[in-house]
Amino acid sequence: MSRISKASSMVLLSVSALALSVAPAPQNPAGAQQRTLEASHEQARAIEAWSATLAVQAATYATPLVAMYNLRSTVAFGEHPKAPPGEIWRLEDITTPKLAAESGYVSPNVDVVYGFGFVDLAAEPVILTAPDSGGRYYMIEIVDMYTNAFAYPAGGASGYKGGKFALVGPGWKGELPPGLTRIDAPTRWIELQPRVNVKSEADLADARKVLRAITLQRLSEFNGGTAPPRPAYDYEVPRMTPGVATSHMQFDNPLQFWSIFSAALNENPPPASDIQSLLPGFKYLGIELGKQWKPEDTDPLILAQMKKAAAEIGEIALGTMPLAGSLAKGWVIPPYNTGNAGSDFLSRLDVAVFGLTANTTTQAIYYSGVLDGDNRPMTGHKRYTMTLKPPMDYAKPIAPGFWSVTMYDRVTNYTAPNLINRYHLADYNDLKKNPDGSITIYMQTTSPGADKESNWLPTPPGAFYLIFRNYAPAPEATAALRNPATIEGPPGVYPVGE
Image (cartoon, rainbow, N blue to C red):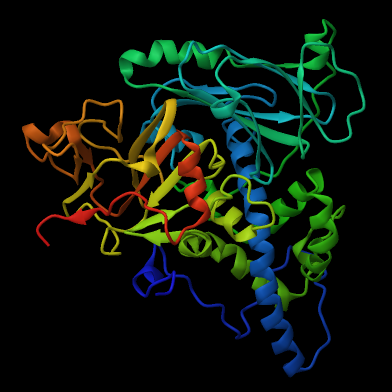
């Protein structure tokens, strides 16, 4: 049987085929001189068809970088910044739908309190202090501007004892004081994302202590000197559809996607291998390293395909998830390379759109429940159950790790408001077990009854999806992802009474 069944072809969003007909040319800025090609009708058709495929491949490569740019705008710049560069924005409450929307962070985990901090390493290194958590689960993920999680100073194999770390940007030649662990960053800008486990409202105070003890300090200040003045940043603000995660690439004008990609690319050059093998092909779209892309410098025929690709790349990413991973009982089994996909640009694209800054699979495994067990979209118009049966090897963590399952609104990609303010269930909750030791989770908009409410995961009224997480997974759980054909993932979610 093919990895992608006929049913799974309906996963998430239908992806429009790329048309070969000539699209209307985008309007030029006032007074701009549009670059045009001289070609016969047949040549124009060939150029259009080829540039359409190139634009999709370039957008596939570009989207993670644009997604990080958008997130940086939300956190550190934009109209309502949360924390300036070099500081951590701490979300010290459990992630409600309101907090998720404020952060712009898709598919947030409600088992943790989060931090978001963008750091500019152009001038000098930045010193990260991580605390000893006293055995509480936490991690500090460090991500480059291409969404690669390249370092974990805390969490998983790094442990929970903390320490002091020097975050060093590309090309820095100075000396570090003793007692610091050096971490070299691939890009000028990086993002730190601490996550500290919180089990309940009563547990918040202790979780916040750990989160607040994660701090950043510029090297000059750490050495007792005066830090250099901050640069005068002047970044283009993404203009996007409100109420939708910015990683979905829903720009008011899709051509802004390309101007942001060009600016971010020049500020954060990719690996040398990409510069040598990929970027030369992008010149036909007007994308060149060291040069800011402008729409008026691009032929209208090609520009129309770039606009189309940018407008559709979010849907393409969501639709291709079973291709990058695999589909089993309605769950997308993540690629082994999630979080640091290397040159697997489709995997990197899908993760950036659906779960931006997802961790590597040695740190956490995310199973995405995009369909029910019969490969049909899930909706709050129905009632569902999922029964977890031992031994649950796919969800086996190493203490103090844990597993959880979280409910999300399919439209916003944020947690879904509900009457009891419950957004997830986890192994540390008081879940009622069946006589055989299994656990049945009830998913519906209304209560399943007083005797089942401990296992009730409320759904939104419309379309929804789930994420099953295993934090600090056992090595065998991670290793199983290498063979998607044989892995046993979470059980199917089935409608009641059908």
